[in-house]
Length: 326
Image: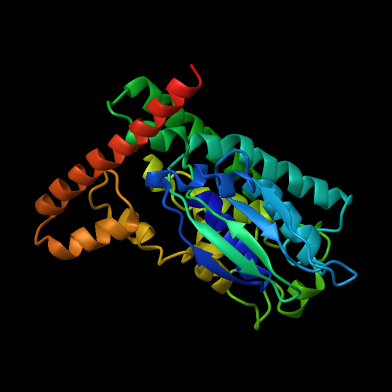
């Protein structure tokens, strides 16, 4: 979910055209040879850039791992630095370090399994994105998917998730103070046209942001996980700056479009309603089951059955890999 959606959000923010295909991970489609030729790791997301080169010759450039994809898209298709900064500038490397902070911290701490495949067609050419569900961290796994509850593991990863959120809370707070003092340089020309605080400002353009005075790849990467914090059993009430930051990003039209790829993001509505939080589900299946149920107790029973089914195929895949790599 989160790894794939951070890519679809960036695609929407940059105005790139694309189509989406869904991968059947229950049957290990992501492990098939054609997929492994694009991403040897058998995970999502991955892209294949089919944009013609300078000589108008066709080519295919595969890129996998969400962090690498975001940097690639910015380098190739964000020439006016709507979501990034000029290469090798101080702000560029500041953005990169926060992007990698997310990749090595928040992502691994919050993991969920769900996969999709996306094809992309930017204005300048064609490239494919392979996108398979996200991993919402170890907190997600032990809280939602483990065959048995292990309090130590759940507590360990929820605590680490909260610690990471506190780091971001401090960063946003310091950015608010820094911006208020007028110490930040101007944003890109794109942001200046309808800049933060102006009467014509677009939704979700006011700060503070993680780096500089605009929403960047670092914000989108972190947001894609933190926006689903409740699934890891972590509420944002104790992190007011982070909570306000997620609300600002959610106001951005491109973000809303990106969140609904490859299908409407019903998952978030369910998290907000706090229905059936003690079981695991996919957004599509729980909405279907919710329509069929007439009470919360029936929905709970239905979701517990779905959790059991999900756990079975997750453990089946785990056993297969254990046998292969023993």
